Length: 591
Image: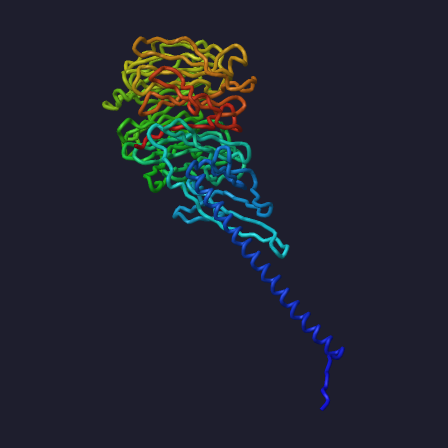
């Protein structure tokens, strides 16, 4: 039998080759796909690691310093020199492939604590931040991929301001004119970053003309009262409840814009923790409302000032450790009237004078004496003359002393401030006259002005309170801070003198560092604010460039502090008007 030999035909060979190619191609595709999937998985894992690292580093930096969490977009970097993590601008890049961006932003909450993104009733949560970490990269398919993860970071470890700390508030005209900022002064002498008080509800760009701040000694609480003007006047009250600002309330709003710089509102805390706010609603009767720590009462009337008696200047002061208070008001007819709050209602008004140097001038001042706690001094002008008047209220007998005006100033008596000596039967009052001089004088309960001293012959401006006076809490000294001098260079160097109650004598004039290098940075207004539990005194100053500065007096050593934070510090720019008190400070009283 013959053997049969078979071979592959060309067709069969081509078919076999095609099958082989398909198999090889499929295997290569599988390997390529497998490689890409593995690479993408590794890239995803790396990106997630970078996201988690960004959150962890942000949390770590928060624990080091809450103030380092500044709104914006950041990267993080490990600094080999300091051997520590740090934020860097904009973003960071890893392996020339992964770009990481950490976005930090504010948190706003409703009164029930609900977080919201945009609500007119919400308030800034001072102790929370939104943190979002995004990582972008080109993946194995040559397309851009990103992973984002967000977290709410809270400052639960924060040191709550306490003891000798306080709050500074001020207007900021760098954007909308109704913006109010604030900072905390901590016990170690450092200041918090700048924060923003939620909008009061006034239309944008209504000028913030006047700010007053009050601290409670029964709750961790402040009440801020603010006045906004333009096409009318609008008065608001804001409450800080220890962690955030709650919804503000409009106390008054009306169309007249006369005397926009005046303090036609005031407030004081009573012993039982209530806060009583008095204000002008463009009627002949000043109004009041009471905050009890939870809610505001309905509006009530203090008393009628008579025809055309529109309230222009106001001040109310509670008797120490009491629910009683004295309220003084200067009206549009320049008449001075006082009312007594007995803890539940107002007494009849008492008129003390019928004229003054102008309704827009701060020519009333009121102060209880803590040494007795039943005596109050009223400093005022009753006849548009050169004589600052003084009367003493005796709360034990519900009566006023006779009116005394035994000192004549070189010019018309215009602007007043009086302070009490907590250690003696004594008050110290200062007055600015129409020829820009400042005179200070003392009185006891008698009353009678003594030890009159002219401390300035040429202070800044005419209608600005370019001086302030305050006694140390437990010492026997008072300081007066003011502007004085024949040149603009002199006026930008605030001056001060010390009054000693034991010797009834004044120190020579001394200088604080200049507020700035140009003539437009002269001292225009100032507040001298003694601490309630130490001999420290906060001095806040506004200059002609509308900047606010602080410096703290060390009463134990009779000198200003030179340490960081307590030394002369520019706190902010962009205030409002030179004659206005668009800033305020209050020491924290709650222990």
